Image 1 (tube, rainbow, N blue to C red):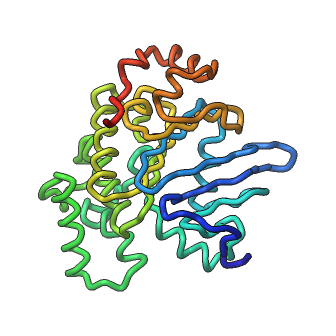
Image 2: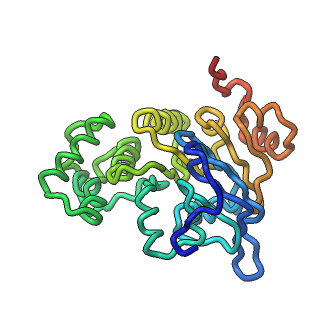
Length: 267
């Protein structure tokens, strides 16, 4: 239906549900037989090598592209069937944290973070500045609102990008290769930030990544994507202890001790 009305009932726990989704570009099948259930408040990592289809899947999940067939339900609404007006409302539920922070070099930190509020709300400037400073405090960034992006460390840029993504109070945060190009210590800090943000703001987190070590550390659920298809999925321990040859090849090629990286299961 044009407004995305659901064809079945969903539990409140089912935040994003993908059913039998396929994406074609002409004769090329970029994604096929994609089925996912992302629960509210989870950290879900979609992992795969170059050309696996991760970027295409991300664009479809946030409504920047449409599937050729199948369904994508967000809070029970099928965004695959929505008209553009209804889709614009759904997009407000998503915040995007880009691979290289994607800060605007010509703007200082305050203006970068304030950008979504100035574009999409009618808040007074005093209230916008108050909200920016509140997010800076929450993310332990301090009084840096007048600094330019060139004056920030890589880790600070990540936090400023995260602050900007949180300004419209999304219920879902999407991270596009958040640890790409970072050294191991910085990767660990970004992983910790993703978990901290989920715990503090209660958001559902979807991380597009090629970093298997990070996935095992932070994920509640992992989907392993290869050649446009989900080849394995489950909790980190299920992938480590399971019989997916591709998953084990990923562990080996990453040079990690997969069992050591697993978080202890809650009692």
